[in-house]
Image 1 (cartoon, rainbow, N blue to C red):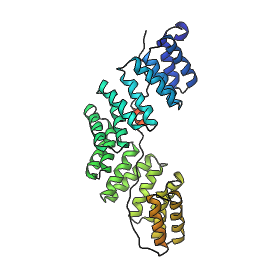
Image 2: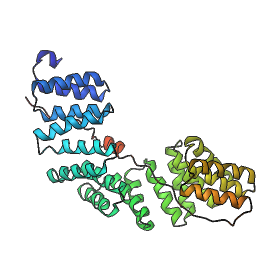
Image 3: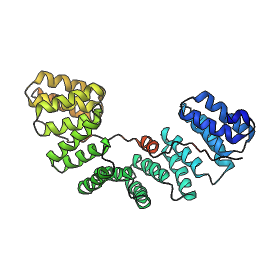
Image 4: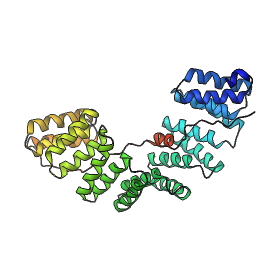
Amino acid sequence: KATQLAPDNAAYHNELGVALGRLNIYTEAVEALSRAVALQPHYPEALNNLGMVYLQMDDPIKAEEWLQKAVRFKPDYAKGYLNLGIVYSRQGENDRAIKVLKKTLEIDPNLIPAYYLYGTTLFQKGNYQEAGEAFRKIIDLSPGFAPAYIRLGEISIRLGEYDDAVKLLEKAIGLAPREATTYDLLGQACMAREEYNKAANAFLWALDLEPNNALYNLHAGELFLKQDQFRQAGSALTRASELDPKNPRIFLLLGRLHQKIREPERAEEFFQKAIELNPDGKIGLEAEAALKETRGETRPEDTGEGGRTEHFYETILREIGVDGADKESKR
């Protein structure tokens, strides 16, 4: 091994630590990177890598500690600030994440992963305009980057701009045709435009790619219920309930289904389950009203609230080769 031939070479220990971390051999990765830091205490790349190994080990406190040291010793270290942003984002500390990601982009205004995480964090806070600007900047830098179109499509859905959403999501599909999330979002946009056949095709594509996704089954079931395709709706919603038994909206829709097919006892059972899961929330209140309606106590009300799509920005960052490691070495 290089570390045996040159045991005092910090760069070799750094590279060994990165390799071990990628193999999920964390204890030995920490040992190698700690050796690199012991040999060169102001070695920012090794400090960064040590922090990211601790993040892989689900220890964000130590991860932040080492990453803070990395940027302290190298104030223009864009990757170190980006990784701090990842730490804060995973902890749900969106304001801190935004602050360090702004710093990242001041240092390197062309760093696409930083724009993506910055835009995603703004999106999670509901700052859709600023988030959209970040994703459009990515497209300026890299027109073929499909995740940016997906995010812009989702922003358009949140804003009720369904025509724009369809165009953006179809562009994303052309660039990355096997991303299930895109088809699910396209289905939601088409359903909002009452293009039910196109929506059904989109949801079925999403399920073909990820059949065990509860949310995709929920959205497909909701569409089939709108179309009075009761068998298909029952199949999709039942599968959704198996995959996500704590989602009250699934049971609300199952209650609506059995209400429509005149099975009031089963409808009441599902409405009760929805109330149990969300007693003080909007869905629980809707289920309570539906339960009274089933018992003949009130008239029906329809909210038409849509489901929310999950986001996987960390998966996308990994797919584009951003794992947080830095193999830059000091000799």
